[in-house]
Amino acid sequence: DFNRLKRLWMSSLDSITQERDELQSKLSETTKHLSQSNTERQRLRTELNKARTGASRNGSRKAKRTDKRSRGKTAAAGIASRETFNRQLLAEIERVKRTGSALALALIGVDSLDELSEEYGKDASEAIMGCYTEQLLASMRVYDGVARYDKDQFAVLLPDTPRDGAVRAIEKIHKRAQATHVNHGERNFPLPGFSGVLTQYAFGETPTAVLNRIDRALDAARQGSRNQIVFVH
Image (cartoon, rainbow, N blue to C red; front, side, top):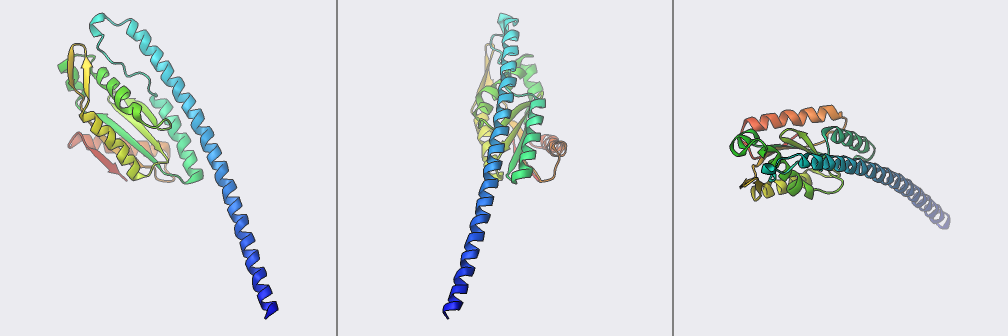
């Protein structure tokens, strides 16, 4: 009986030692991935800040050339370009491949931009987009990616964010848009709402594939009822 108990004890000790070694290995791998992730995010944050600084400078130079009659115009400066956003998306997808973390992507299309420009003046569209940039999208997390994606569109990248968290983030912006007004020249009018499409990155997708998928979904959403948020798979 003593020998049997001794063998059982030794076997248990070996199992505990093996489990400890496996946990140490997993902890080391996780620490490495976190370090790589932080390094990538810091690099992307630096790149985005450079882009925002450059955009702000361009906006300042443009403002100096602007006539006094357009003092109310709000420039959509201080936001990443489409090219910078695409680079950030590629970096985040590479990180997802290593860590398996969640990644959400949203495309926001501001409704009735051309119609409002005709009603309130040719510069009204930039005042509207600037309002979105400075009052709504500026509240996103520092490591989220936000870019002017097209004339009337913004793209939003939400790293480490599952579906529920991404939906809450976009719905928060949607709600704030409904309570915001735009000051343009001597006019004040409600900020138009937006049609938003939200999706989760599917493992194995290329950046082009996921962007094309969400772009098509936004086109379809804007052909139906506007001022709504749609989640697509």
